[in-house]
Image (cartoon, rainbow, N blue to C red; front, side):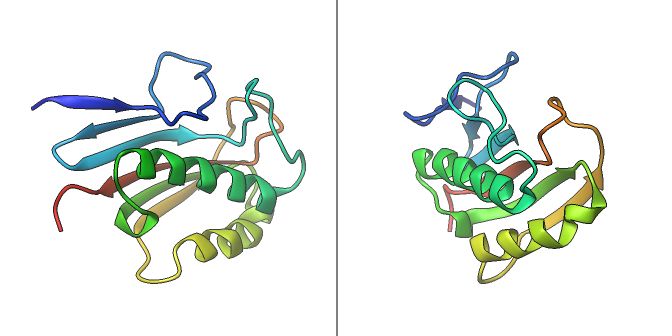
Length: 129
């Protein structure tokens, strides 16, 4: 099965050996996405809601580059630094998924940069309806 690397034009170069997304057999796998600017600095330090919006906008860019929309997302893996941010993250998350919600899980853990409060990885089915 051939695969295609998905890199939006406005994508930040990864800080590790990975691609922002991979498309294979109509499925887009979006790498764990952090709230980074173009130089891989954390944006919106201390604001979990703004970081979540930044992350989901970045994910949306990968999915759209692969030919899909956020309504094609079927699964999200959510990693948060602090449970105290859970409600703020969920409020923003719900705005990006207003209809049927994708399946997901959410765990608390340390993230690659201490100022990052949220990381999300996604799976979307864009090839077959």
